[in-house]
Length: 498
Image (cartoon, rainbow, N blue to C red; front, side, top):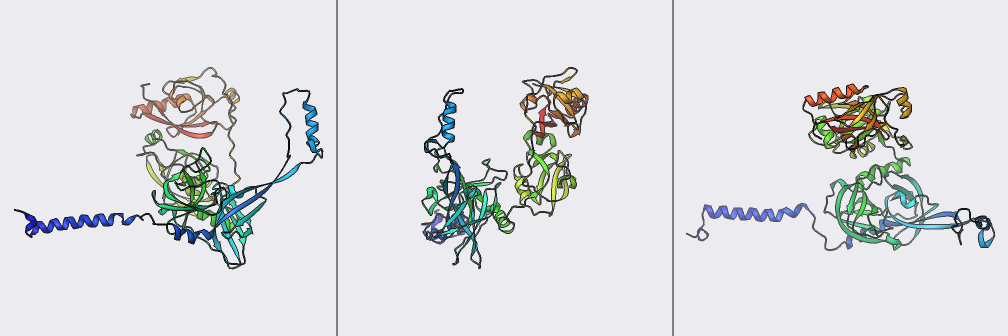
């Protein structure tokens, strides 16, 4: 029997299934915006708020012929030196000044009733500039002054004054943007003037090693020299990024550009306008990444969080009860999926604000409260000189599972390895080339301060803790090492197999 020729329950179910499938097909793409037929309306609305920035820097130096390169001890060396010291062929002995100009981009973010307008750009666009000029879309030129700048995020805010009300744009929420979303970039590539390009967000959270708070949006929209400081817009016309860098062997666009996300830029810009500087939160810890080996030794289910390698004396973390060896999992109710996320989260936190802190300690989560301090932007942490370590002194104990020779701290060793008077732990006097310690960068002169998060002062204590870990069936042991670069945790294999 042909069921299609006769109505009934089967037919009804079939129709319902087909109808439901059709609804799924129709409704599925509704969550994503389709590609626009044209960007013309968007560009027409946004272009007037995007500006070109021209900077001039006065450079003092000689012009004309330069002193030739001569071999050391040449009889002509004194002759040419005296000749060029007198000013070369002109003979006036004066150093000449010349003006160097450069071009970048920016955008007006706020216009006030008194005629003041604020322009956002990159710090590297206006760095070391003696004169800054903002060029509007109609080619009118306005002198600009620097309101504030932040080197660490490469952001700067300028102020211009106009008799007429200038158009402006507003920040959007970059956290809501997804990989694959359409974006529009506007800037001043190669000094050509207002130029519109389009593309998509290619990736999020890129770390290009340009600063401590890298969290770039990556795009394939054409971004070239001169685009720096220009805005990246979403399809609603909101600024979700500030175009800042490109990856290019040739210097031109190869489809890999990077923008500072608005979620990080917006609070920085607000502080620069209000204070003229950035006031960042500070926790007072030195941290390192949690590797798979370290996670295993600490009993974590997977590598996550930021491992506290050391505490700054009297810092907010030390006062709140944070300990060396803790893994910070959450800060201010925000998860810390990896080490490099924590500095940015802390920096964005309000000064003197009490916040919650979740750390992993002794195999369980511990809740703490910490009052966020203010970072000293001029703070410099100096590393020890990296000198070749001396050879192994006598009377040391070889710890075979690690492949190191250890000794207690003595005055001769303190002098030999240039150890601090307050140094603590056990001295590494030799490292075997093919050992697990060598693989992790441990070297003679390093100190083993803790083993399995317990302090050690003798080589015997180190071997005892290794034996205890083996009896517990553990494959790795966690060491706290103080070396040339400061304190760090290292997880080493201790299984008997090589």
